[in-house]
Image (cartoon, rainbow, N blue to C red; front, side, top):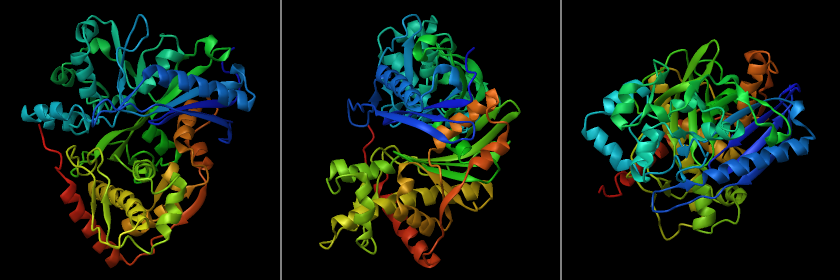
Length: 501
């Protein structure tokens, strides 16, 4: 019988790698495996992935993690999936082959398409129906671009021969041998095609983007049994029982289960989510409203602010400037100076996300003097990450009327103590780092585990969260306000740099 064991396999397909982790019924990690995936940059501002590489790498690391844990398919109660969200794929239903590379969430090729929709007066419609902004970040304009630019795609889609999906849909299709074409509410809500209040695909939005209904997956909850894997993949069938976009999964894994709780994931970008309970909040500060998760008992919602460049700024110091040999070296270099020496780095390499939403902004390094050193640049990079997060936290407090009591953090850069202290100082909010930092994968495991009874209830998720270290604000608030004001001036200079065509 499929899935009779008590372990959960979490598949975490991210922007730079595919990962798989195995958790037992107590939430302890038993094994993990990871494989990087290629980043494809066909033109400036364009970012793509090979869909076949996404699938091959994810299957390989899933098998590797199970082998490390010494588990067979029968030992696994369920699979939970979490994924980079807005990345857009289209494939042929008959062959299962993609019609083009995946367009990654960072890709800005549809900026002008969004401008045309604004000129048609459609932005208020999209904001009200979806809780999102008209921005190339989201899947809908990417999907429309593929249908318009790949030969024969639009007619094939209208005829029902093509399938669209975000990465979760692509993996579920592949895992089930094409038996399931579905997504969950969190991923669906990031497409510009999903009605937030109605909880499903919106015909008026489909018409505005000229997307045929036939190409869309079925929208399901974030925690239920969707189907089973083809036995050939793991030597036996395993139920697929949970799916959520990576940031919602991290919110769940951080046990931010009550309204007002906030988490931030420091990954390639930085992604803040605030639990707003059973009601979506339409932001007055250009934040996003999305389902936090949909469970059998109903939907909880979240406010979100997306910062496009966080860890990628440290990667730029390493790969672009050669200031460090590895990302881990940035903390020691930045600590070698007491401050940034007046330097401000606005890492708007692919535009600015929340709360600014300017796809034409570009990176700016301001305040350079003859005394500026590599250490000042490194510290300014860390401050640039923290400033962006502080801006989003302030917007969340204004929208919700709730000042967060703490910020729970995860992601690769959450291991950087200096960054987290800077974050606490510049935002004026305590920062809490959990003992288990694999919160995205753990959240996916919990959602799947809830569906099959491995995790009995939400209280078990809360009980699994444990504190590693807390960073309290130590900077004089007046000094923090001065630094925030200087940051704001720098942001204004970075905005609108790229000329519109």
